[in-house]
Amino acid sequence: MADLSSFPITKKWPAKNPDIIQLYSLPTPNGVKVSIALEELGLAYEPHRIEFGPDGVKSPEFISLNPNGRIPAIIDPNGPGGKPIGLFESGAILVYLAEKTGKLIPADPALRYETLSWVMFQMSGVGPMLGQFGHFYKFAADKVANNSYPTERYRDESKRLLSVLEDRLKDRPWIMGDEYTIADITTYPWVRGADIFYGGREALDYASFPSVVDWVERASARPAAQKGFDIPAKA
Image (cartoon, rainbow, N blue to C red; front, side, top):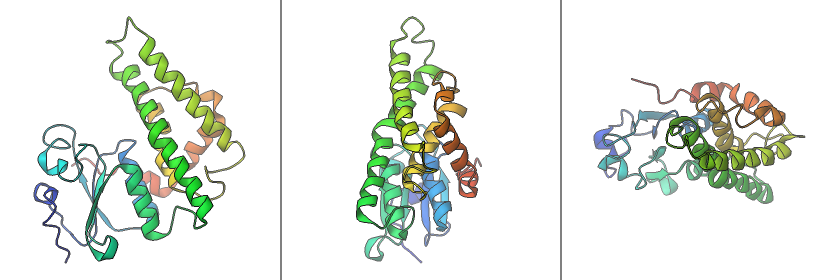
């Protein structure tokens, strides 16, 4: 049995089975990336629901695994060299899981780097911009009622990024063509979330991005996605 005692987070959220991947997350656009990938890869894992606030992501135990205090994070008891490893940042976790299994990322070096470019596109653009749009559009609308600039800025940049995806997806089912990869998994939960969580479909003019909409629907219909969307479940 793996010894995870060197990870303080396991004191607050004990592992029932320390021999499998421990997932610390919430079913948010960032969080579900990892649960979906784990389901796609068929890897055994144990989910722990980490709430927002001082008893969750801001607790000393969680901070010990992710100094940035954000979900998701994982501990893999079978990391490099057979030693446990703790990881945070959804993009880094997806790359790690893909390379660990040799799946969800092309074997060809050139295509691998192209896939990573699209992963970084999401991490640096799609996630932050759609997240900021959603914040001002849904949660801070009262604070910017007399100043439309923040909402319009992030709306327009989000639409620009959606247009980049639209161009990419016009003639292919997935970002990398016929192969479903971590580039898809890291990106479509955010496009989906901007619609169903932030209610931004009309404001972001999804009708102008039919290839993106079809792609999100196609990805969301996958069995791994259907399961991963609700992990970790509420107690």
